[in-house]
Image (cartoon, rainbow, N blue to C red; front, side, top):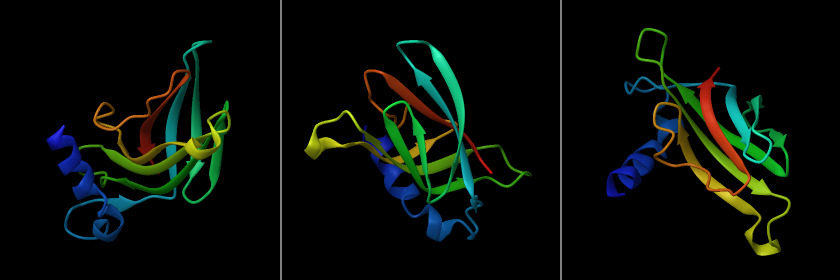
Length: 122
């Protein structure tokens, strides 16, 4: 758990580091895989940075999406805020943080009906 928190804290600075020697390149949209666990429906969403995408009762806002350059090992990290229209008034935001394409289990949406995963940043 400590390693995941340290990784998340380090990557919170990605937008500032993105053009630095770290090798992250900012992208304009995130490609997300959305799963409805009840119907087993899988949908690939294109979520532009700064705009809202919807899946079921979820509204997904990607604040930043960063990818590795083509000459490096493919990876992507997206900072997202996900709200559920069916959540209680005070708990509308069900996820806020970084999700990683190569490590989806590090920081993931915990929702009884839906699953969201980052595929890539473009």
